[in-house]
Image (tube, rainbow over all chains, first blue to last red; front, side, top):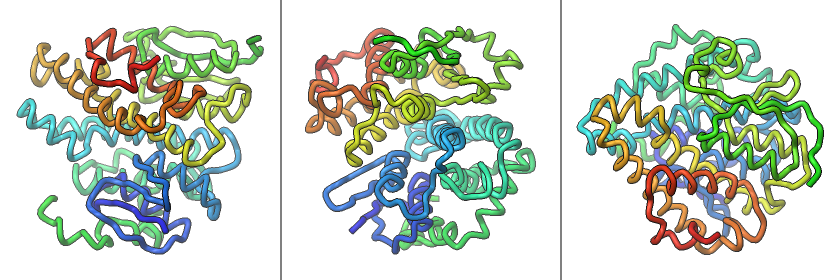
Length: 196
Length: 193
């Protein structure tokens, strides 16, 4: 039995919920932490590690391509989001920075998201098809979908500057798995509404 | 180990811990590569930006294929050049290696790299806050890693062979000690050679 410890607003948790839905797992029991996956005796945290663990252990509906270069591109895109964009707008990090410095952090978060999205737009404009790296949904999409939603909903990012990302975002919204994994569909959504 | 002749080029900076990770991988696999030194000014060079729009290093060029992000590069090298495997076969142990790599790459390094310290901490608060901030970030990350690895580490982070986790830990430990004067006394697992 897989148990996912999740937080409805966390984009990292959303990535894993999205992956689990795409792999057709039944809904799990979310608790109030950023993603931790417990799979029998194995416990894995960090969304990148959880994603790769699920991909290697549960091979139905592969979320990484076989072609080594497209595979590497998916890993690169996910890494860009996981290391160069998302850490800078994580709720806990922004709170730490505000507490330590009293600094205005929303503008900094917006700057980092815009910088990252500009880079992703350049990278994807020549490789994207229906999805980020072609005609199939892969790891890059699983990481991009929550990132774009967070950027728009929490940080008011103007997506008209990023036409490829905007188009991909509209594609994701058409997926049942995207909606099933989205924050508003989680059982803890209304409980922590005042955390917005 | 004999070096294999391949057509690899690595854009790197000698102080970059992200580049250091990839250099370890290349050396362990015995892969020859052309080293291209990137400076702060050459990062804004249009030719370099074409390779990596984020203007970050490292960037690997393998023939016509260009790849950025140290973890993606290392996994690409591990898939293409299987000598000296950098991931174990056991799936849970692989997950542990990915976890360690990402704690370093997402929770520690982004908050103590020169870009963040100079462009946010120094500008928003002042130069005097850079070191204490970096030290607090590193200590928090190392505390988490210490707990994660205390029952897993052998001679190396996840057992008795060098794997991905070690490639991420070694440069971070080096940076913590050399640049940020972190006392390693409380980190019994991380300090063990």
